[in-house]
Length: 229
Image (cartoon, rainbow, N blue to C red; front, side, top):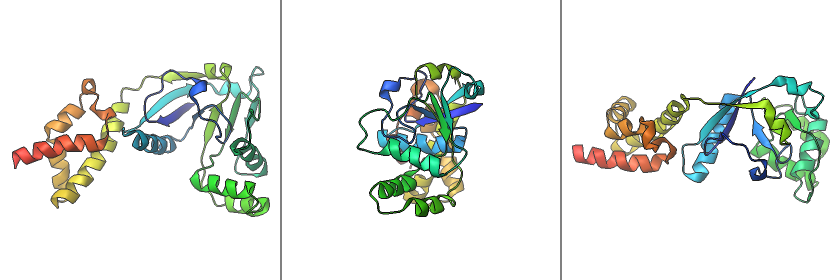
């Protein structure tokens, strides 16, 4: 199975010690089979670090779900068992690891759900009311690799097309900014960007510009446009 991890940078070496605690399934390395979901997290994490973000791809050996060596827990959707497990892991009062599973698979508690989990933990919403709310949540997916040995079931995939994804995301933001600042339509802004020296440099992987914030690249583009005018 092809799976994806969205972050502010490429992840080719996984260190569980650097993984955050207090996540849905505990501390571990998280991936998803839904590329769009990983792209969202890449963009979000990138904004916090002033980068374009990056989606790293892996090949996951699904035999891990049946392999006796691994202790696996799988949730087939938002249900009571999932809620109880996530609530335990997200409880800020927990000081020790809450489980000994190697791999956990199930849906995601996004920001909205996480806020409601806090309400549930604080006794502001009943379990039944919360479960009723979860029925209307769109499908999400995540797999958490909680132990070092479980990581052997992931193979890093070198993807040369990733730079094209980063350039595309940056280009969308730059074109929109050009439209607003210069009061021009999308076609004019697109032509201006793709015919610029800034784009030429951005498209060259050796410059590493695609790892910088779109604001920084826009500064280069803006200076170039001013010289032309």
